[in-house]
Image (cartoon, rainbow, N blue to C red; front, side, top):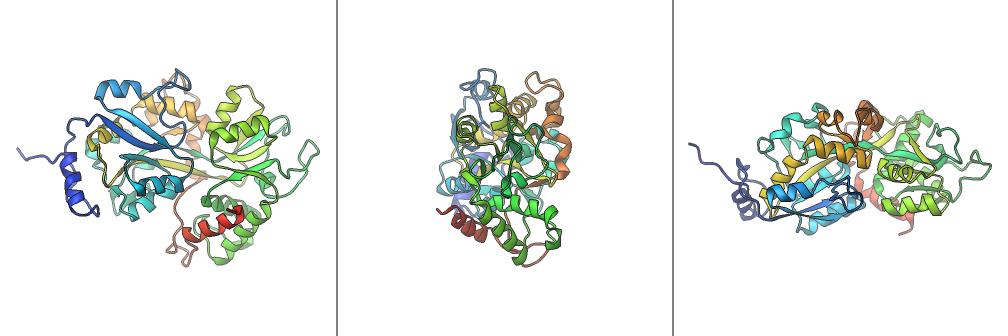
Length: 382
């Protein structure tokens, strides 16, 4: 019999190489180390504390003996910072963070053969460029979805047709200005949202991809965001703060996640969401393993658990996301058989999924993320 290489042994080999590359990917998963430390978006890893109906942690802990420790992060930049600092095993990274983690050698390749449910993953996600480099997988798809336009249904009797309600000063249907009543996302990747708006409304710019902007296209997006600054009451990054702002601070329109909209509508608040005519950016999140993970066996056990149809369906019902496992779309009482369609399963091709902008791009001579970050921070006045 060919000897197998355990996950733990491979990590030791990784550390011996200075954390730069795996000498050989593991070929077996050993006994769990007793815990696993995960950096995750809010609402992604629930143990029934917010709502007893949503718990995909307790059973995993009982079955594997791996206690799940979660550190929530509100932005991709925060996730990258936490992974750079170390001390975590896994991260639910969006596309604007994943390739940065790969390039920075902070995550390791994943042996998908050690994740039996890999074969059930949506084929549209298996080789996605935000987690696959030169044919090597650096993570397991988790869930995905659009960045929606959330709006107050008392103000908008019909769903807004355009992102203009947050980008351009105007009088809203209630006869009042949108100034001070809208929000924008507190993250440099929001430059792409401005680019999506300009793709349709200023076609002469020739924008083909909101993450691949030449100097002129980028300048136009920054100018739009600079003008938007006068309209924005708050730049949001904390989902729960935005929920409160819609309830108590007079916010009537904003980029948002289905998570906030679900919470607000669940409380019978007058909030709904739409994807405007320009389309939308979105997120396809990948569970990635730290290059120096201290609990790799528990991490691999979680990777397998993360693809269970029950978890995928429950999470998608809770967050308003789309499962990475199509089988989760049927037979889940919380999601219902209509849930995947409602959350955008068939809109995959219409979403511009987050990815890290680089100088090297198909268009040639694009503005890199480092410049996006610098300029957006200046707009926010931080």
